Length: 417
Image 1 (tube, helix red, strand yellow):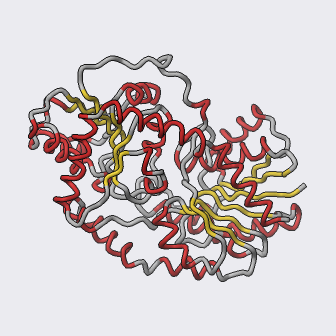
Image 2 (image 1 turned 180 degrees about the vertical axis):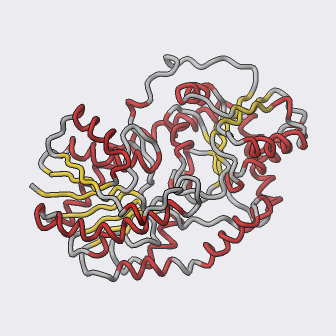
Image 3 (image 1 turned 45 degrees about the horizontal axis):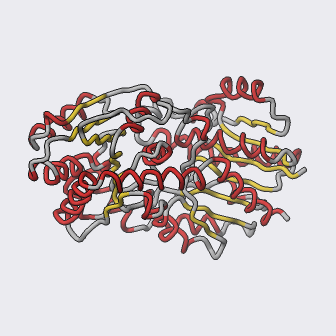
């Protein structure tokens, strides 16, 4: 039997985002391909949950290995710090190499796949072993178009200008040349592939969205019956970070609807939990004359959110960049059409399944284009609904964890045999 080692720094049963990636991929791969021994290397952060799930699942060819950096090096305040988690992750990647080397002598890994976190700046252990190595989907190199800078905080602009320069991309090229082992790189968006791909030292590269879902996690919410409403309903689900684009969305709503005497619409802003952010967003709402149309919902149970998405006319995701949005994916799973900018993350979706707004040469033109798309959606609800159905068909065919695991298996076979 061949032995696959997954590097999953973020790994937790029944979790979303990166932690869900680190759990779902190895589980499904081990279930689908019992002729492979699957090893998962992660931290002991969720060890008890993992062991409980392993007992429940009873997958004989699935094995977990745990490694933690020494306590005296661990940055204890990583959750409340912008850099704490990054520091701990960097140290983990450097120090875990000896542990992998020791395990490799006993087990003999035929392939290493780094699945979480997939950061191009940091030294994955897979770069330092003479073992076939897969990394990705890799994200993080997406940039924000300068036309959006007026909506960003000073600190965000500073970071974005550094990103635009791209000097840190060369770090990835340096890691690629540490060993001559066979490598294969996956990228979460077209922008990531275009920016980082040229530093991959001629190794194979491929576009593959980082996000995916399991159909059984989306049971019928309302037996296919949508809640009737006299209003055109829009939903934004996410945080209020400056680069998430809430401000430009609200300004576009004013242009699209209020200035055209359209009043039969409603907006639900879901997931803005912090009071300071709530005050800021509601100030925008008041200033733009949208108070009678906007409902702020700081927290909602996931099942209730899915019901809202299933019943609404349009999901709104106006982020200026992203490696891949679970909000867009979940809306698509439910057949809910999404309007978004055609930027990193969303650029991995076909143009026909989302209402994409291209970024223009200025903030004003981009704002007006977004408003125009909102207006079109209001006036063409039937066509918008068809787009939602196309999105649903696409994600069920292309963005399930099962489909992703099949793609990985083909890559592994080409590298191992």
